[in-house]
Image (cartoon, rainbow, N blue to C red):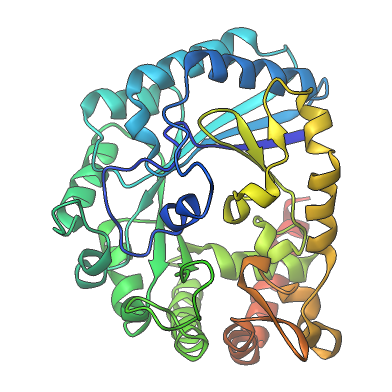
Length: 377
């Protein structure tokens, strides 16, 4: 393998919060074994050894930690993992570390470690206080906004690199300006806005937090207007979805599997070493094996893994006649649903509304980037 991205669940689905919309908590209860517990040092060592055994001589490995809440595994686990990974790294292999966290368990010792080991931190923060505290709650149903802000201040003091991950609920979607401007005011330069998921097997759009396609489309258009105005004024802030579409227009690769139209860009590693092809499909039917059963490269190329990749090459019915099919690429298949007319993306109308509204400006930015690159040659 030239590149290997591992999404590691060191605390499985365990979490210190009880976010009402948590997709992984819902996914876990749809498995025979909801939680595999905290990853042992032996499993971590095996994962690292298997990753190095699978990677090419000049390859790249990204170790990303997620949950549940990954910091529940404890700082000692990460110290061990990083020490093992750095000590055993083949000479020409490049590695990176990142973590997605709610931030509420971080302290100075954590922050110093993250800075020292050059972790990129994704901080989960839902735009503005009302939207965040409505659904991102602790076991006592208390909002966590102020605790997340304390985590951000901690990361600032220790000069840790971080970005914002904002889940767009129905409530957040009604106030795109408040979400974007609040995150800007707080100092976030890099932002990712992702649509909230409904529980597996439930009718879409029926939960209190549900995000409906029309609301998402309006949110994305209004958010783009604010983002584009900042670009025009030289006050640039990164919004991942918009950047991905622009990179596609330029001819670059997109940064997520949802926008590039290809599944299989990473492997999920559960706490017990179980492997899945996607975070949204860490379900019993898509279990592709367990560390130690076979070499990692063989597991990644197993029949079930190949079946998942093949499924990802299929596209929703509307893509065949859509002028934006090569930009949107059908979106994430976790949003696909099937009816008597074929396969569809639940958020198709939202992405089409965005591209109807913003494509000329995206093309303008793409051309400016091309000219900038030519000037640097």
